[in-house]
Length: 287
Image (cartoon, rainbow, N blue to C red):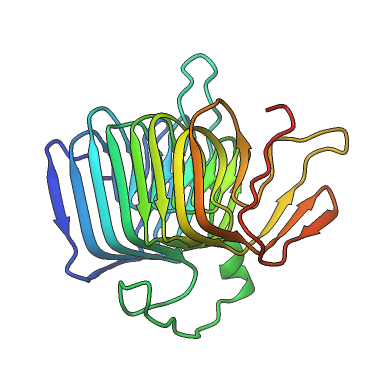
């Protein structure tokens, strides 16, 4: 079962690794190394390898944290997550509005503040925490590679964070290189960010930043190289598709500086190729 801290905690990994943990929760229990975090939490210099986390029912899952909530202030730095297999199999309860989201690091966050610095989630092996270290060239089998994904059968999914529904968020010098699959919004960094707080992203490398955004955000020095697919019906969008953000709602401040998208966007079979030009952000036509 996941650990639910009952007090403020500083967890220093000292670059040691936790390898091969398998967690499957009961219905409604958030899954991760830490399941439900309601107190202040600091985690640094830790390697999580081959974390297999499955959350059932109305719950969320991440390799490190299932859910951060209440007055929690969470600070994660110099953490490396390799070969994650994160799955949320429940369906959203319309009456409660509870999240059923999946993230490479955090499933969902609605606490006070969340900060990720120097965090890397990827499907390759590195012996060091530093994102600048060179990966070993060990190849995965096709079966292994197909299983390694961040998946939500009904909710949002993100390479780092499934969803942010409250509080301030800052992500810097971080990256994700994993397969992300969700029923709702999907993003390389964040599946969905709908918060009255501020969202700041700086110095990140990823495939697609955010699936959906409703809030104030500043993005600087980010590079996106991804093949992004919108499989909506031919009669309209299932959601939104964009190189940086798929769907923007509301009229909050949105600022980009030194950001580039050089991938492909495939909208129902029609590919739009980008060639390294400046930031592009495409939103849902209804906005």
